Image 1: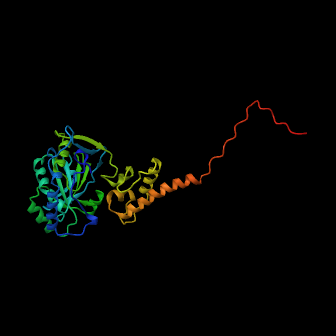
Image 2 (image 1 turned 90 degrees about the vertical axis):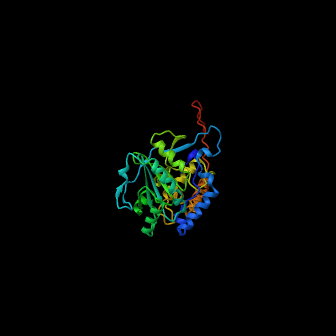
Length: 315
């Protein structure tokens, strides 16, 4: 979603709905190569060139929704629920062992958990687990110091469905979701957000925004723009009409979402993209045709003055 200085700082993500399975070692090596090629994106913010005096920005949801509660059992056999961590900042991290970007960020998450262990809790929710022993081996080899559990389909859908990995939900001390990040981000972003939520000093300005489907898809009806949908040639009234249609019609790709939700959840979906373009065209043409077919209003005859003499009739 939103990164420092308002930029999208992730460099890698794995979109689950479009992914062919690849051995985990291949993904890990690929992730490391990509990071080496784009390493600037992961350097500390102070290392990046930016205009003198520009203050970095982090953003939180203005009126956040409660984080969907759930119960789970970690790999150590300990049962827990999200409410247990109320009073702490929580980073709910959906990941997979075969996801290269997920594996690449683990060392930074471990360090973050170590530094803020008394005020923050990271929870790893593993998805698409074929072999629990493989998951256990990764957790042990990486030295993960936070609880890891297998995410059930119910949990995944409670958080809007996880379309790409890694996905991190930032949850404040009141158990409300204030931000969501999809992809591999600069670890400094997470630390800055955690510190801001803990009312600790940060080298950033905090802004707020309205959730228009970026965090929870149920708020897609608030969106004024949708990924891959060009409404720039429509009038404001036509744009509202198009958005209403996009929020009313269900996508036929099988996602069981509205077209608006599908555009946010799965931007590569060609079915929702094509249908959205058709709706925009229909709205534009429909309004234009209506203007052409409606006859002009008949001119109104001027009212006769009160003192106009009556018309005489012939004898």
